[in-house]
Image (cartoon, rainbow, N blue to C red):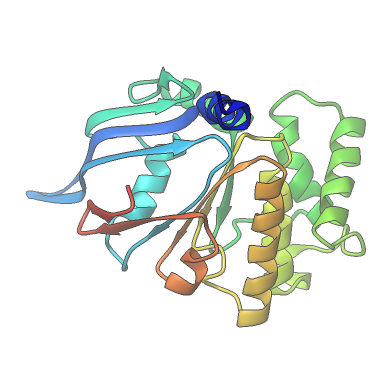
Length: 239
């Protein structure tokens, strides 16, 4: 018996399926017009994977991410997170899941302009009931990790685009989520800043997080371990 091979098989078996979409449709009603953003998408993402979802503008990739992240619900089909169906949960239940399990990074940062970097990163922990001392300690550690220990008290308009995105990444990690979902995270950055952000995602993945990056840029997508291609609301490769 080949013992090392069997040990490897056991390790592979232990990697659980974290996200699953089954025949998911998302149809928006615009007056009398129906827009099919997703058309029967099925995919699986395992714990610890680094996946990119790539497609042109209007392909449905961001809608797919919103459904994976419990920001939206499918019109038809089912969604599982860690073997629990989340397709038909209430908004309050989905908000609880988002707060505990998922961190989001968006193209336009979505930082609160009246709060400084430290306060922006502390905010998600407030909703999870952590006291101020805990929130401040972790926020400082995260900002130092992303290279912004010297920018703790700067507001978003005092930071460059790359720095704002690093604050957003620190905020996404605030509650130590299992999953990081990023929607065009380098789309509003120059090349050098974009490379720095991708380096951070690789480091986060090495820490054991499941990372999903949505992009239209194949050069960004190639940084992931697996690429899922979407076009016209359907998976056309890598699902």
